[in-house]
Amino acid sequence: NQPKNHILVIFGASGDLTYRKLVPAVFDLFDQGLLPEKFAILGLGRTDLGDTAFRDKMKEGIKQFALNKPDSEEKLNSYLEKLHYFSFDTKDPDEYCLLKGKLRELDEAYETEGNFIYYLATPPSMYEIIPAQLDEQGLSDESTGFKRLIVEKPFGYDLKTAQKLNKSLLTNFKEEQIYRIDHYLGKETVQNLLVTRFSNGIFEPLWNRNYIHHVEITGAENIGVGNRGGYYEGSGAMRDMIQNHLLLLVGLVAMEPPALIDSTNIRNEIAKVFHSLRPIQEKEVAQYAIRGQYIASNIKGKQVKGYREEEGVATDSRTETFAAIKLFIDNWRWADVPFYIRSGKMLPTRVTEIVIHFKATPHHLFADDESICKNYNQLVIRIQPDEGVLMKFGMKVPGAGFKVQNVNMDFHYSDLSETYLPSAYERLLLDCMLGDSTLYHRGDAVEAAWKFVDPILNAWKNDNSIPVHGYPAGTWGPDVSDDLIEQDDITWRYPC
Ligand code: BG6
Image (cartoon, rainbow, N blue to C red; front, side):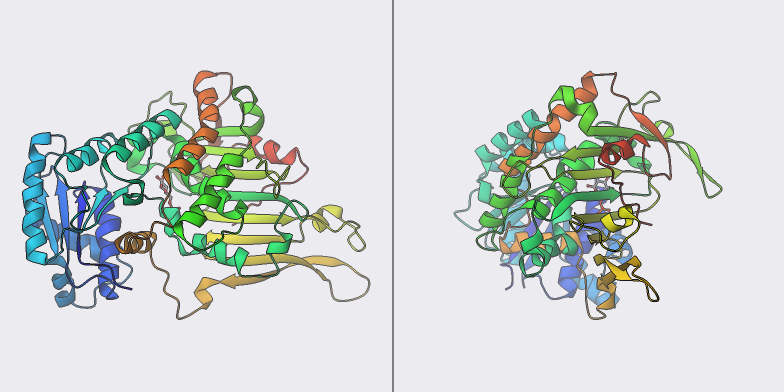
């Protein structure tokens, strides 16, 4: 299944995303022969670059970030020849007719029959302006060729702005033309959640409130905000990771089996989960959510800055770099099963994992230690790194008596020597080229996710009595996040 000939038009092409992710990911597709015969990239930006300077810069990006390192200069050059750059001011409506002319020229040269994908890799302040101007120029019209629009996160700042953005996009493009990207959906291990759940007879019968005690989802990073302090100040862990990536994981863990594996059915089921999230009222926020901020510390002899000392961050900032929530999904399958989710920067390690904690046996025959017994059956789905699936269960300690110990059955993707794990952008860009939006967010689901996090964000903004707990960089977040979960006599898993 090869995509049709087309042009990928990248707005914000002089930025980091294009350099580190997009152009290298498209190179990986090229390297595997997955691009159509006639294909071009048109990079757009205000920086005054010509084709040659753009190609030179992208060459570096490919060498550094492509998964398939170019095996010859010749191959690399034949890819780079497809790259073009056009410098124009995206804010100036008068310049869009110049863009139209440039597109017409490339369209003829490459015989792409009016098929264009527009990628918005710009600051979000441009998300309404660019599509409106494209529409104004007739560049959203599909009477000749497809026109698809990829929108990067953040998709809105809260429910109101997300609704406004959706409304605005829908006046210029149809929902089927809009691809809201969340790179987590492009991860192989995230997609594997569907296969683990729905292709194995042993898990699905147990996948409900009768057998599952609670679910834990962690998205931990061991780096700080780096040079993104300016962006992160207005975002925080809740907007940066939880509203999108972590809630998506909740959706995939909790959804009902879709009628078919296709865009409509899978996205319907994810949206249903979001609609079933039990609302947390502003006055209850302190009970269900914890926020924290990393403070300076010494990690293995190395002094590490606190968040407030980072570049672009206010010295009295109250932006959370750690957030944890206890949530419930009020539906038939999950009633009263707590989901604990947490995400943070500057934690001890980088790991994203989902842990399904199964209920203990009704009667403890063997263990003298009840708490060990409770932890026997866990299914750990490791999204990254060391992608894989781990099942924990109780086994007899050899020798006299009936002592039980916890052992692992462990699968690592790396054990499959033949397996190539495509990058998230590679997979998602290819899907968009093929017109498959299954792994992209739908507008209604995005709004439902905002609806859930909005009251938490409002309480954090308006109620100064809700503390922002400091946690030393390199630790697992504020100690109080343990209270959130330990109230129930269980603890977070601390993966190493
Ligand atoms: C991005 C966030 O969406 O996801 C970053 O903006 C975060 O702050 C990143 O570091 C994490 O992605 P991954 O794929 O490394 O888990």
